[in-house]
Image: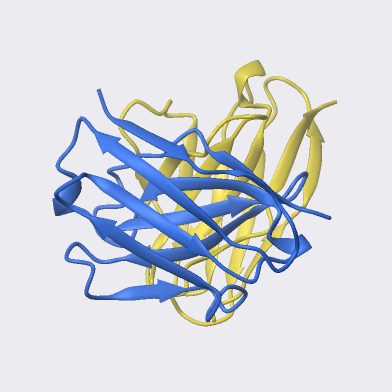
Length: 107
Length: 119
């Protein structure tokens, strides 16, 4: 199975900060990667698909980049509603695998 | 409105069995592959199993292979997960979701159902 290594596992940031989260795949996955946001008690919500495509309705402060094995999610200016946990997911092949998650907390 | 409504969760003893159901509405269920994803308390997301449109192809995480069986009934717009030989580490909220491998941008999730494996 492809391993997805996500970092950091948590971070503290202030409103307005630029935040970067990375995910590394144990083998090449082309651009078959999505980024999800999850808030407590809720189902995950897709933010970015195909590594860099913004999901409909998601604010443009979210962006994704990368291909092959290294991927990045960037929040250009953190907003109060962005405090949540973020996960990457490789949909290149089965079994699908998520990264370990990054909890974004208020500084 | 798209709805995925899971049911069948609850408390079960180690070694026991449970069958989860997911009733779909508001979208062409029979046109999409589907998946189950779980989340243990305070932990991250884990993809569990996926099934093709026809049900002819099924896929499993190594952690559940041989114990869990995914199936679907397109005439009833329902997805199932038969869970046997349950272990404490299977305790989690189980989400039904549209499988992301095709058209990942179509993002449908249920609200989840809690499975607790404990004596």
